[in-house]
Length: 202
Image 1 (tube, rainbow, N blue to C red):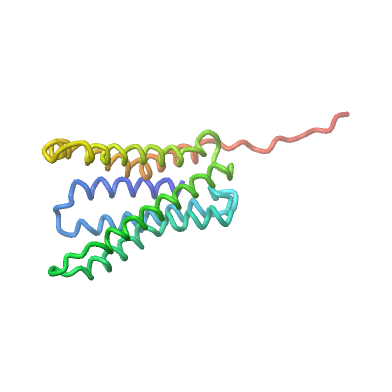
Image 2: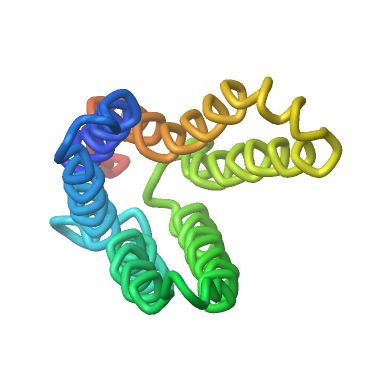
């Protein structure tokens, strides 16, 4: 329940940021969203009890989810450090390009491992334990569509579809926060089956 509320808050903050990015101080919405996201994912990973952990507190699953949780914050710090080293004179973006590939591998790899561990742990009831993998698949499709459009379209065509590309990016982000958060709340509100009393035969 708490993790789901946290993910929903992340989704709301992301929507506020996208609509208010020209307002001074709006960057703090992104930082606040990353902090709430980290806390929510860590809560899902560890749980208040072992039974409440979506990965049953298995080391591989917990480790992957810790990386998923803190990576957005770590990524911001590293990107700022790399960008600070780029001077106006040199304009050498090699480090940024190299790091962007590393960041993509770390984020996608940890998310994939975490999603598989959630599915294998069995803590989340079927078929919803596959939901993180569904979200990853949907995000991959929404990432591939703009890449294909950029590769095949001209400059004018890309500018005309900027709204569509922005929408796909927003949907991709909300699927992993707002979507999974709502699902978590629905699953948390469902009555849990009590233990069945077994009577001895006479």
